[in-house]
Image 1 (cartoon, rainbow, N blue to C red):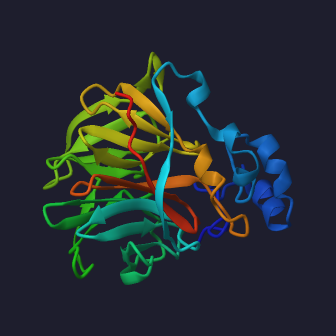
Image 2: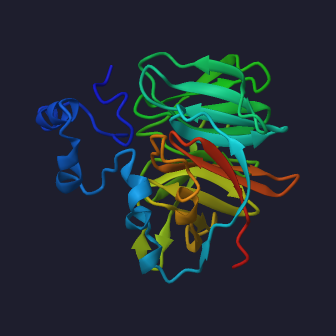
Length: 293
């Protein structure tokens, strides 16, 4: 089991000769040095103090709109959210961390878990999508995904892929996957083979760190790892269509909780509602959809 298993914000740090000294410093309480050594790493707590530091929207030419909260719902503040889907009135959530990864079916109004299954300790849960009455769940570095029955959460299959698994969504035909780079891959659900690939670009600049995904009204919406913004992406070209600045949400989070990064987007197509949350957040927010096109 990874030594950084229970340290929020260290999503991809691995044990090696290169970072053993760093991990020792963390364990002994010297984590204050890491933002200096690794500016891309955020720790639970500092995201509430200076959220604007983690926003990419100051350098974009694409339309920007600030998030407007329409409603709030309770969320398990112990859930290290990696994937979020709305289906038949419930939220389905994939959580990460080695030894703690789960797939959960949850009541939206109360936040209570209706059903849950735990992944084997060697798997770090990642993005999920529901297509053809099946839940597909990625894992981080095992190059293995799981397939479940959405009603019972019983595992009914597995699939393989190359590289890391991050976010997952569907356009109703393909499974659409991110791997933490600027690349999004469209895959066939029967074999998980590659159908096509797009690169996300904001103007002429690649957008790296594409994380959790959701397909909303003909667009791909993406969390960007370590950024307080949601990117709206053309599924045809990869062009950034616009940004949602999510900094206002951090002002509505209770500081008594260990607040980690924004992660988790779900869409209710029947009611045309968008839900967002984050790792270790106590709240799921329903937000207003952007008016910009």
